Length: 191
Image (cartoon, rainbow, N blue to C red; front, side, top):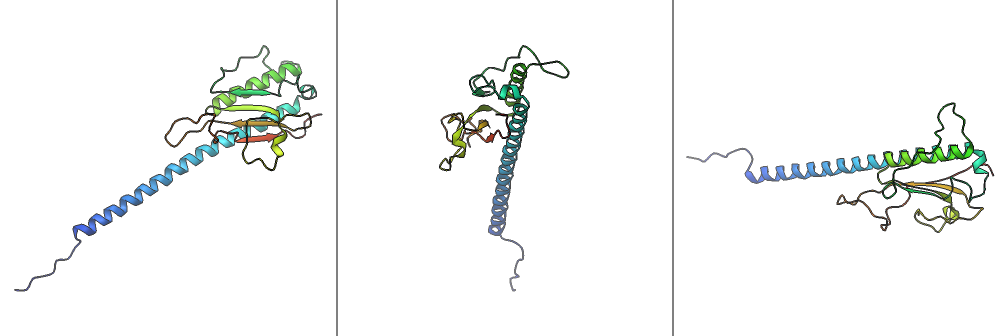
C-alpha cells in the first residue's frame, strides 16, 4: 500500500500565523493609544489658544488699565499656577451683564475668570502675563516661563499645562518638557 499525503497546516505554520496576528494587534493598539494621546494634547492646545486669545481681547477692550504704567497695570506680571496656587478668590465686584464696573474692577474680574478657566480646563495649568523681549529672540529654541521685561518689550500671554511622563507620573517644573505651550503676543493694545 502506498501512503497518502495529508493535506492541511502543520502546527508550526499555525503558530507562526498566530504570532504574526498578535504582533499586528499589538502594533495597532500602540498606534491607537498614540493617536488618543495626540488628540488629547491637541484639544488642550486648542483650549489654551482659545483662553489666551480671549484674554488678549479683554485686555485690549480695557483701555484705561492698559494705558497705566507696567507697575500699576493689574494684567501685567500675573502669575498663576493651578497645581500650587489656591483656587482664585472671588473679586469684590462681579462684572456681569449691565452692572457698571470700573476699569480696575473689570481687570480684576477678567483675571479671576481666566484663572478659573485655566484651573478647570488645563491639568496643572499655568498662566503668565508679562513683557517678554525674549519672545522674538532668534537664538531661543524653547519657550520659557521667564520674562525678559523692558518697557518696549511686547506683552505676552503664556499658557501651559503639566503633562505626564511615559510612566504616568506628572511632569515636574525642572523638566524641560514643561514649558509654555502657547505664547501669544498682545498686538493692537493701546499705548
